[in-house]
Image 1 (cartoon, rainbow over the protein chains, first blue to last red):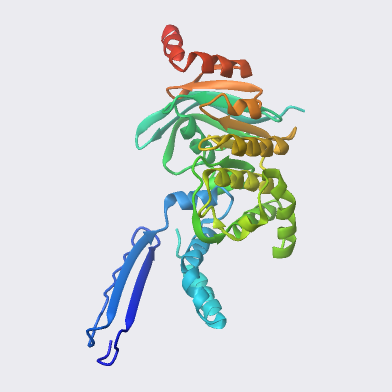
Image 2 (cartoon, rainbow over the protein chains, first blue to last red):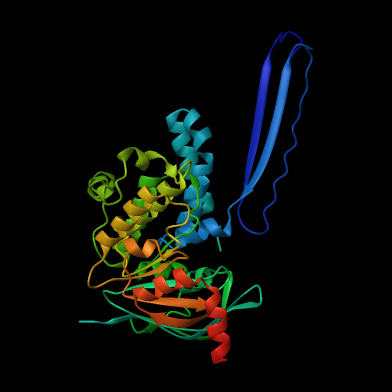
Length: 104
Length: 256
């Protein structure tokens, strides 16, 4: 927040999703505020793809790779929906590529 | 034509090293509805998880034959594709994945497995709309995230909708009546009854005789300490209701 940011508000949310047993998430919020009427908030959460969720998909005949892809897509959906469509759909495709073979 | 769909012999299984199933025997033929009753902790839910291959459960002995072939080495996904369906006691919420998408992906996975035509979004939506009546569900549910914000009754009806779409050979309903009021119970039961055919079979796990007034069983089995200790027809359920599970303690002790 610069010195002229009078009455400005910021809310930053960082949600991480862990995939696999070795994943870790570290978030380092950097907050610099030069105007004392500004309000800055930060929130972070971490979730993990649960074994029970994967079992639900498996019990419906859906492969683990597809399940993870759907769960991750679903997790990111809110944010991706706010982005311009071309960017969002590219981000989604990139995600699927990254996930290919990452499970198991 | 009364084929044996499921044959379970002397099944023993652990969870976290603790024995839960201690020699379970059961045979289910096509066209049959089997009810399994028993106290909490008798192993009813464990049985449903073991049949469907949940990774937390370890089979330590015995045999499970599904359509004549052993299930023991088969992964949960393959068991599902082979036609085994579990209506979960506590269906999970999956944010961000719509009901419709989930149904379509599951349906197409099965179609692909059977070498049949997969449906695109439009054709599939038509198919689903035909089935919604079975559980009296509103099409607006389809666009919502899977089970998210659903009431208990809505979640259970959604399980039956999935059953209607996937047309399993063996359905296992794990306490489908838990958390349901009378109206929801009627709708769910009616759905299950509509899906019954001569070629499929259903295992209904419940504590309460009441469900069995709506989903009539051909056989009633009672589980106690990891085994089926009594079997009979639907009258057995009435007896249990009248006497409570305590009378089992005496009966089982008497035969030991």
